[in-house]
Length: 211
Image (tube, rainbow, N blue to C red; front, side, top):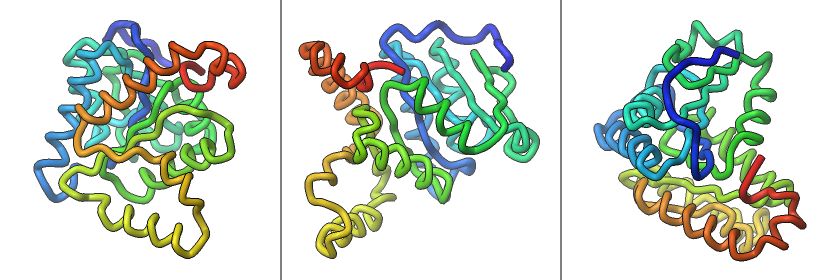
């Protein structure tokens, strides 16, 4: 792990962001990634992400850093050259495997957001949603549907419910937001609800609000 001087300690909590290592075909994807990083910084949220300097991942991190946010990157050592490790973060954890990466991201985060991305983004986001389904945690999981990027995925989830492979009630484990502002507003609302019910949080081992 390397500790670098950029960013202030997260005052509210940390949000893990999953997103693409490319910027995608539309300028809206990059704009939304930058907007998310800036809004997280303004709201005193820290960012946990995959630790690279490229694509939507790097853009989100750079925007959060520019706003003074704490930014923690987690990257398997084998990928630090291929994915181009970000060397300007508050902390960069170099881990041994993808499994260790995902476990550490989960343990450091109070909520999860997915921006547009590919196989890796879907893998990371739906693993954390699966953990919520299994009651391993109760942290918010939000999908930002930038310019309808996830429309077909959402239709598939409805199809999975109709075919009885996903319970209808479990669709609520994935909150869908139009943009970063809506995503962060919903996470803040969940945080406020949790603060009103400390007994529930204690019974869940603090799962909603902390690592």
